[in-house]
Structure formats: structure tokens, C-alpha cells
Image (tube, rainbow, N blue to C red):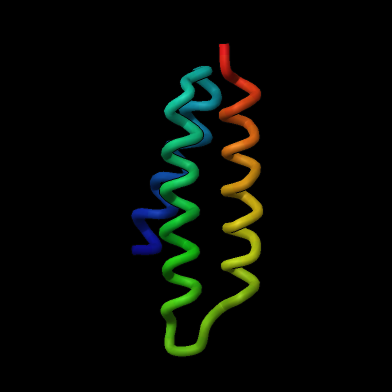
Amino acid sequence: MGWIANILLILSIWLVGNKNRWAFVAGSVGNFLWIHRGLYQQEPMYDLVFIAVVMTVLNVRAWLKWRP
């Protein structure tokens, strides 16, 4: 699952460079996968969950600011 999340985050950065709004969807899905991974490990990784939540909030903010 981590590889898929990373691929989505890389795709997100690529799409932002192309000024494509789908970048924020890809980034948010990638971050949700990291949140899931961080919470459901044998020993939860709260630092990973924290940064993924922050990045998801920033993705939503950017999505709203790019509205026409």
C-alpha cells in the first residue's frame, strides 16, 4: 500500500506542474492511504498520520483556491 501511496503523491506533484486539478485528488488519496497505513500497523505511527493529515488539509485548501 505504501508504494501505491507514493506513486499517487508523485503523480500529484506531476499534475500540479501541468496545472491539472486532479493533482489534489491524487494527493489526497495518497495521503489517505498513508493515514490508513500509519493507523493500522502493529504499532501505530502517529507522526506519519499527523503529516498525512496536514498534507490532506493543504490539498483541500489548494483545491478550493484553484476554483475558477
